[in-house]
Length: 281
Image 1: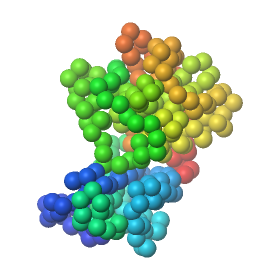
Image 2: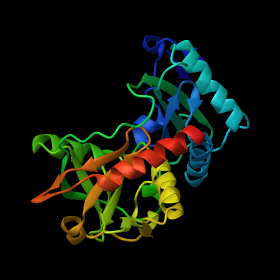
Image 3: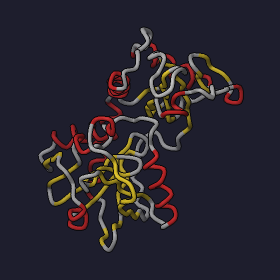
């Protein structure tokens, strides 16, 4: 079952309009959310990121799109799919209604919500081999639009194919200034000694919810200092640890980049704190 434009229907009964603007022009956004036993993790952060992104794309936000309304829509769908007592991933898509070419004929939006079962209630550190490489065939553009979860992810698609063809578990994306921006599916953190560094939003990295929560956690601890600054390729091989964050997996340690192998000591410490934050939040 999915929520298709406000109605819960069977997946096979959904007919997407061929004039859908997300399909034709990537005129859409998505939000990926983790739910634990009917509790939406970091819901306020997800909600305000979605609203801010819609404003940036000059979408008309429906009057009923309150936090309470969308939360109720999510919970109703989880109930319909019998996922209220287990972990789940929720994906919300918002897209401008059909009409027009590049210039839309309306700024009103439609939406869909889907749910997927997850294996674990809280984040588990995956310490399997996880090798990455840089993807330099195409560059992200630094700036505000790159920070959004828009449906224009063609660079991520091409980089995923490159990773598969070369037996890498992930790739790091680079912007036009040759700075390391993020991984295919999350934000990158670089650990060197007691300093933890991540790319600033101005470099074009995703404005990730887990990134935000981890920055808050690091700033509250005396063990580490947090730096939001551009990351160069040179820094990667000098680092003690590299790890990727997103809302579904939490923290994924990188074990190898070129000839350098990495530990996951700091990632383990931070994952424990992230799970605590998720329980409380």
